[in-house]
Length: 370
Image: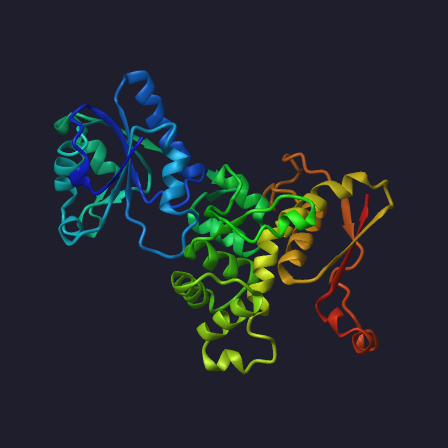
């Protein structure tokens, strides 16, 4: 696959099947479009093209490099389309004439029902279909992929990740969310532990997402930018150096808070490295089925993301019916397998807190197998 940065670099004069969008996560919704393009490529012997509108946002699910790697085996071209002033002011019909036909020589144009293009988003799927005969292409407009009634989108998946629902986010992405980076040579400390290790340099945008979603860090963008800036100067070798970098990125008011300024960041890094949230998901998926009726599942979590996973998993097994409220009978096949013993989590009392201050964050939830 050729990865081209700019429409001017696309010079193939063959007919194509092309799809347009941000493709900032390549989730199941995006894959519906790219899979249709891939089918046209194989069956009609046209060029398979993904035209991705340039991602300027920091808040993304994958880097541009990762996007290219995901598409490499199925597409002929990935074309990155920057939003220049000329492009922004292009009318809907000019977009069809100059880009769809003039640049890509499209035989098939594959888009979702919500696709808009041209100045002021004046063009849409209806316009694409109306102009198809005039310009000699076939418009293929696909319905949006949904999960339990909600459109699968990058925004929805980011919400799931922020809520700690990593397993569901992975399911809607269609692949496990991961970290891609450059493997760095370390100090060979893994040899002293008895097993191999490797060091990966995380990209700035992934650091930001990890700090925000796993550490609930309000200043994630500032910290990630400062880490990337410091790495350009020299390698961050110790945890104390990382603490200094984090503190230097935070506003004065945040440094005066009772909690250590680096606590949330270190929590986020630990969760990501250890894949802790997926471990909680795995526990809650399998443990209830190992219980006999009347057996109890007791789970202590130590931060809000873990507790949210436990709470939602219990609720899904206790009241997971997806039928409309007004339906007279259940038709979705839901079978109740858990009953909450306590509606609210059990937390440490005053005496326990005095003996063990670290128990302040612990929450115990108990459910019974039915």
